[in-house]
Image 1 (cartoon, helix red, strand yellow):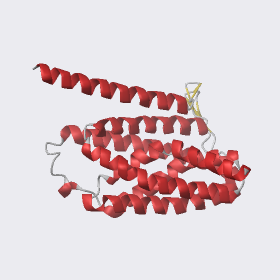
Image 2 (cartoon, helix red, strand yellow):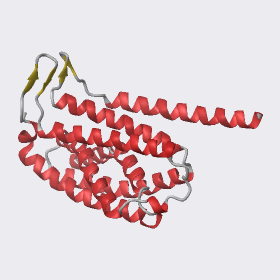
Image 3 (cartoon, rainbow, N blue to C red):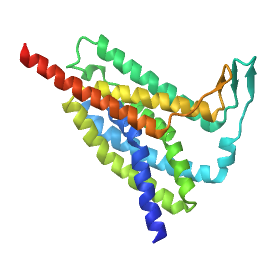
Image 4 (tube, rainbow, N blue to C red):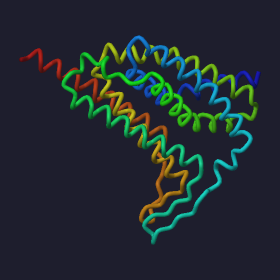
Length: 249
């Protein structure tokens, strides 16, 4: 009975921590031709599930090596850092997500033709690879959180598989919603930008980075969800106000 309760808690934890990953998958899959988008999401997530289980096995076996500093850098009190493998992966993920969000926002502002986009779609293989890579980056927190709750491998592996199947189902609904409500793409990209900031602060904390003597502190999940809540409220209020202005013209 205890194992079942732990499994349910882990599935819930994976679902909550997977929100930002789900958003990234939905936005990234839009770069594929429309007929291939569902296949891209499904294949990308299935490969990521297998890699997550492999990563779980590796982390259970060699977790101490991922946390061990691989360098110790000091620069006249201006910059200090002691990066480890975990911090490097998280920092890379944060930088890439911020780059992706800014690039897509810039594309929205600069593109004169947002209707016929099929000619500008990206390679299906490249998109699947990016979904898999970023899924692995996002997995670290969820796997480490799972390991804090239990050391039973089959429970953690089952939670990963169940949450992956849920992600396949939910990603289709999120993608469909964004397709029908394109204005929310902007909100989604800014949420993705905040996700990137969160990963940068977490990676900076894990790497023990200090700038001018000040340590980088990670953005808490509570702060993250509060910021997302505010962004959503602002977007809804702005949309309603814009409709009101249009009716009064």
